[in-house]
Length: 452
Image (cartoon, rainbow, N blue to C red; front, side, top):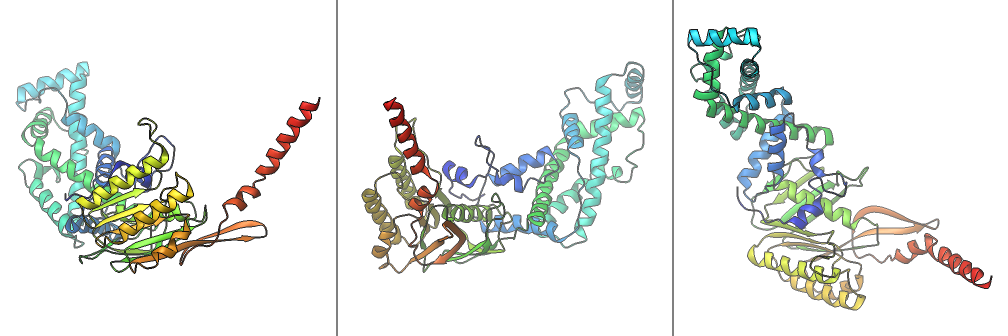
């Protein structure tokens, strides 16, 4: 799979997987798999983004096929786990010779040997699974599957033509096998055709993920990304939201080569960080071919995604927050130098220092980034004063999240708009919490105690 640049900070910002903070993971919105192997495959897919449009389109088309068509593959986690255990069972295969098979069977009948039980149950579960897959294979061919699923169907067709295997789909899965048949199928499954059966199980886990992702798209109302083949950066998303935010307000945005840097402002809690996380997540999901939490999405293919949203102090290295920010900007600059066509997000650039240094560093950074036309940049900040200096650059677009005071309380619409924010609600919110009154009461109490 072609390389797509992403790092640990970005993965953490996007909340893709469970962490120690207890936050809801994006993974949970796609976790409709039926098997443990499917769960591992889902994690693998979510961890390996690509910039190969063929890979992404193929995966998306497979998911969409199951989204559009009623094709079932009823799998049972426990049954698959037992089959895996049986195939890896560390005992010699039972002989298919009449005398030896009869002896082993007779021995089990009187001693209830556990090895023989595992073998006979394993064979029964393989029979049941292969009959399920055979029905799925026939249903698949009836509904014009995409190219990758056609290739999977061809592999299954080849498998079911193997001598001994082809009889299984014509056999009653509940039929009780005699001792000779147990030996025959044990040798067939765990020795002669073991690689072929493992290959089919691998296919089953992949199909389990496609079906799970189709269920996720249906259940959550996600859309499927459309990919642009042009060389210029382009992202158009409607009704974008973050799935981890309950009753999230949806937003739309268009970014193209002519306006490749978005300068985002707004008061605290107005929705900037949530929007940037949602946008970063949509870009990431599109580059693993997954459904998107949005109404629609068209995007060009990027070579990487770098976000800086929840950057913390690096206490272990002795870094302050501001120096961690500087290091992060430097690392990002290096990635831009290595790879063109990157998607970069900075939330609250240089928040860890005084206003003067933050102003100078932000202006210098954004000015330098504005001269890079082969990548996309989204930068949020409280320092709206630098907007006047940036208006001279034609490729910068200005967006903000509005807020207002209504009946003495801050009101947030969480809708992105064109322009620059002028609201400064931070001190109002501070005063509204009654902190000064509490401190004054504490001071008065101390004075009263001192006079006793």
